Image (cartoon, rainbow, N blue to C red):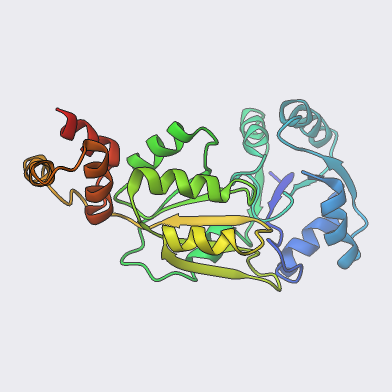
Length: 269
């Protein structure tokens, strides 16, 4: 059975970061399905690729997946690309993959750039374990719930430059002055990767222009810094010094990386 669809990784910034095989495939197929035809055409023009393009994005995935299946059944070969990086990784494509499997259509992936992996090569870590959660939810409670789940693992997520500071402030308020890394404009002229306390990162980006795609890693906190019994002892010491439950939760969260809400509940009880 011949391959009928290719999932092709494209550059995440620098247009030269594309494989020879990817260019060959994009030239050889009958159609290229892409998130934004205007973005993809910039890449195609650089490599003199004349293949027809069609839009395929999160708002028309179901409809266009059916169309692509029909095109394949008519004998066409298709390439799927996203605006940047690898399709199906926080980008459209999963609906199409499901349809391909349902119809027993052979497909393959052409590997290439991925912002998460590129980001990780910049960072010093204790081990190879990490969790990737895609774009972090906009709702503050959902942010805390999901990051609480991966509290003891290096946790990576994407965020919009317009929301980064608000998100980081929410994390600081709930997890204390934790260690994080933030990258923007990876592989581009103004590439920047900063690792510091979340407070210093917030201050930095409040005073510097934020543009481009953002990748963030929250460094793993040490598993169970303190048993509940130890927390209670420290809470009682601070209570005896006249600190309020709110102040106690802030102090212990900052010193030990424990969850501020958990400490507050222990303090008021």
